[in-house]
Amino acid sequence: MLWIAGAFCLLTYLSPVLDALGGIRGSALSVWLLIFGVSAVAGNALGGRFADRFPAPRLTVISTVGLTLALLAFGALLTLGVHGRTGAVCAAVLLVVWGLFGWSFAPVQQHHLVGLAPGSAGIVLSLSAGATFAGIALGGFLGSLALSHAGAAGVGWTAGAVELTAAVTALLLVGPAARRGPAR
Image (cartoon, rainbow, N blue to C red; front, side, top):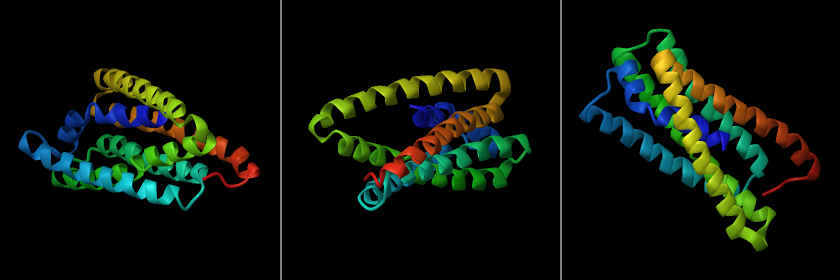
């Protein structure tokens, strides 16, 4: 839930963030959304491939840490006053990083859950979907508070803080999982 809450904290308000960072608005916004979308598809495909080869707990940490860095970078760049062409290029790079790391999480999580309860795959995936939807709502809510109280930079910092919580949680869970042996 925290993984998607951090992502949707920023994704819900991506338009004002990209406008503040690189003056990206109107039809230009479509190009940056395409960059993000293609990267998200690639991240999802890579996550699925990696889930078959590497332990899910480690992949979860890698995914959430990569996403945390991308989301925090939005806040940092806006706080530092980066804008214009430099901001637009930085935004494109961050959207690629976000797409690759952020969207690699879902197939890893689903693979892991089905592996934990293969006889109840439908149930665990439904519960996971419910948590995902709750996280989307939470992220949108937190993003709205951040935007109204701290502007576009606040959205990046808030999204990064939520994602950092997800990454720390994943790290704390990897310790016990590593002691039990590899989970795929």
